[in-house]
Image (tube, rainbow, N blue to C red; front, side):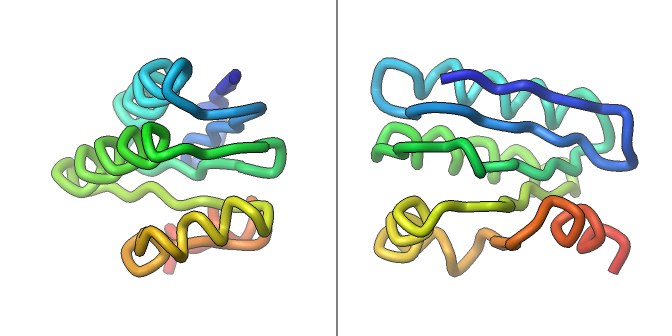
Length: 112
């Protein structure tokens, strides 16, 4: 699992690649927290290359979501593969986490 972050735009773009499971969830959480703290607490998580998200990954995502909300920011996801979207829907995350098809659409949601 790898997360690369770009702070050059109005929002931070964090792209995750690979599997987020019990062995990588802490690194995933740390990367999301770092992305949130690196700007004004607005992050688009690009999931096009995310291949697996375990319950440990969901927990890391929840920690980052709570931190973003507490700071008055937001964390949204884009390009979420169908298998990951299904995990988010079954777990109930899709009720409080905005999912967008494209990065541009997700970034534009911060202007609305």
